[in-house]
Length: 74
Image (cartoon, rainbow, N blue to C red):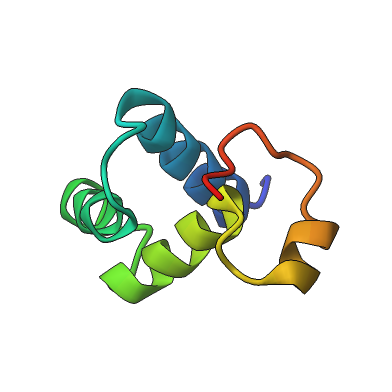
């Protein structure tokens, strides 16, 4: 039986939200993620931390590590 990769699912959910609501705040997007997908996110802070990583707001070191820069909001 194949193991489910929750990290990829979470990434897809959050990137879809960023695509659909590009002008929404990080906090707002994280609340939407938790409300709509509670089985994947334990709280808004978990979703918010991932959104910050995808938008380039997690610090210089993380910006250098992340290869996908489409959603950066600097």
